[in-house]
Image 1: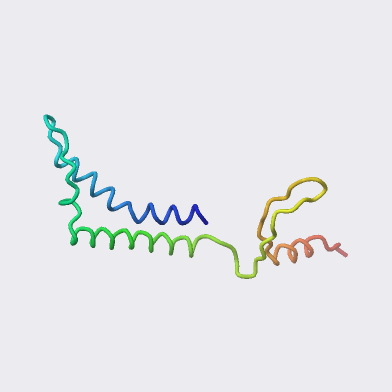
Image 2 (image 1 turned 90 degrees about the horizontal axis):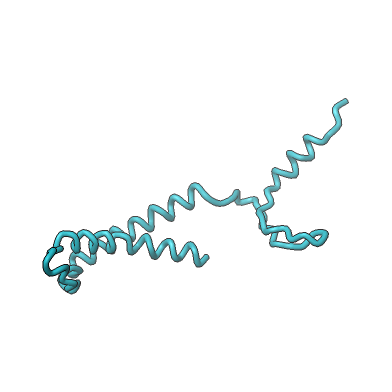
Length: 109
């Protein structure tokens, strides 16, 4: 869960970082360096546009994960457990897997 929240926060901050990098590159003076007066960089109008762009990126990423990831609604999570002294990692159990395996094992007449 922490990984997902971290990804969402980084995606939200991505437009701010890109804009700040562009601003610093544009205001670079080889003799003086960059004046880091970020108060003028992130005005209220710019911040609203950047926040909107960040929210849009997060929304698109969340929709991408919702439609491409995950398991079927019938899947059951099996927690990590020990079998014969071996740790079996957690996994999702699909009910169709057992049905398919049972039908393949039926003897042919």
